[in-house]
Image (cartoon, rainbow, N blue to C red):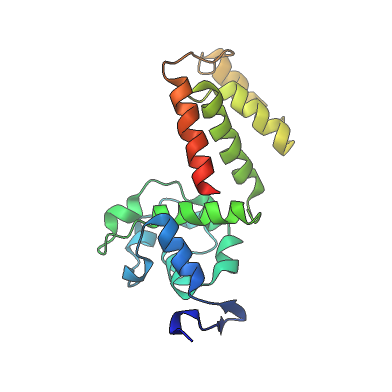
Length: 190
């Protein structure tokens, strides 16, 4: 038996090396390069809200602990700002790993933060439809899906009155090309 395929139980979670290899393959990042210096966590603007700190997410990927990572809110809170990648002395882009973890969670039907997953899908759908984001249409869909219609109505009204939100989407050149890019990326993700 190959040492990489030996099952191990860590903290009561069954694990193999397959999860790490899947993350490396999809993200293009060599997660074993991380030696836990903590620079990613120190620079992360969202770390204060995460249930698992960024460097701990990387360690858990290294150990193959898929279940707790895919069920955490941390992967959904990553803003993709790439501060982690900029600070990393080993040049590991944790933001790409986080994006990959979100993809895996969605493909396995395990998004722990359902509203964030819904926002992501609606956002991409809005771009596919118009070639760019149309805020009013996107927010309308989001509010209907999450059934949270009135929580920030006052803010939306203020933005509309100041001309920050348009009722009709802007037309852009290349909208069909944007749709094609999104279609291809969705096919590749399957």
